Length: 132
Image 1 (cartoon, one colour):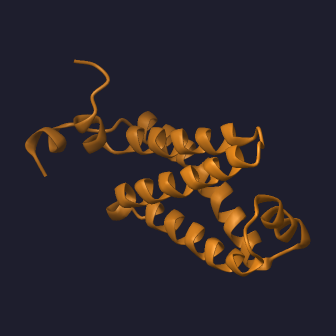
Image 2 (cartoon, one colour):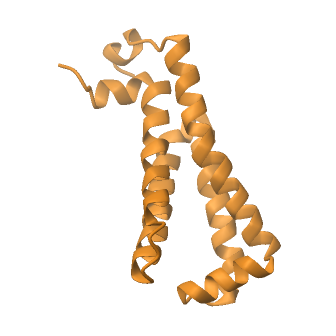
């Protein structure tokens, strides 16, 4: 780690704000992933609406949970943020493809993933400073 990243600290307020902001996408994606594993009727109908085969529900549920867990672990949070962004990008594309106007939710979740990480990890603020 560079000396700049080591000297940059996170205030308790920033850390907690980052944790709270990160919690929303984490909780929503974990809930969504678990629902895919349980396969209730609305999930199966949703997959049919988007044109995906029912056989992919479990696979996508596991993928969604795995990406989220990688994000939650501090040492792998950057990889998790990238994976969650990719997953949410696919969800956004699926919503746009079928004309579902709720695509803004998946975009907002992606923004929250990175905003939360930005607030709780000084290395990201060193990499992407908002002020000069």
